[in-house]
Image (spheres, rainbow, N blue to C red):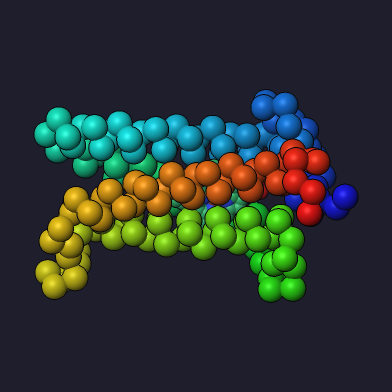
Length: 168
Ligand code: HEM
């Protein structure tokens, strides 16, 4: 079976050098771990808000949303452009491309929504009429979407690097 990801990995000479025992390169294992830590961090941040520690909550969530933006720009976006986007739409029937595309689309919406909440709540950069007035539903929705994207990310990782898990 062809794993498009392998071409990049061979270039980088780092196939199978990950630490999770799959066929993933080290960077992908690192991203997977970091993303789950960030997902847990967002939950901790939400608990801080419930405890009315709003300053700590704001720092925690902002740092995670910005760190995630960096991870997307420097790892996921380049991977998507090399391995997935050239095959869209012809190969969307295959789990490999369908999962990665669903993940990327939902991930884009979620990251933008997270940045919007950050800009609205934490800065005065947006004109008043564009700022959120009801923060709670926005923040809860972003947290929910984030974990959904995380699960899609895990499925994408599994499809990329755990052979024989999916048949198609
Ligand atoms: C909230 C936003 C996002 C979260 C939480 C997230 C999470 C994850 C996780 C946990 C993985 C598995 C680790 C890995 O394989 O490297 C992953 C992989 C991936 N994500 Fe995302 N992601 C997000 C946004 C995006 C966006 C916006 C794109 C598209 C531009 C994208 C494209 C990809 C691709 C192509 C992979 C496979 C990377 C590879 O291993 O080569 N993700 N993501």
